[in-house]
Image 1: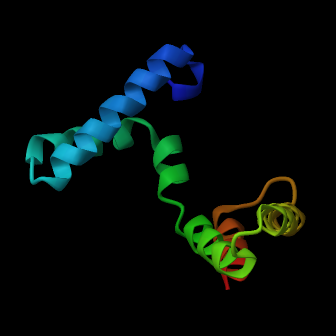
Image 2: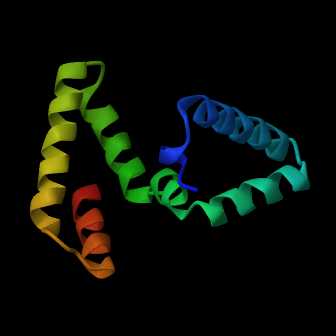
Length: 106
């Protein structure tokens, strides 16, 4: 089941569980690490969102460039999103998505 289709209280519980598993895994709990791995295997959409390296790079650049200005940060986010949409088009293939991410991140 997709997390977006769960009731909001279930989403809150799910993310609380994930945060707890993460704490345990960081402390060396291999069972918690296995639970995280299994969860992400079962929810590739969440894995894609949380593990999107290009987005992390872009956010890091925007944080550095915009500084403490929410206005500038949001304007830059909107510009990047527009650029991504324009470059990707309607139905991008995986290679196009990868290349556009690289272009935007650098």
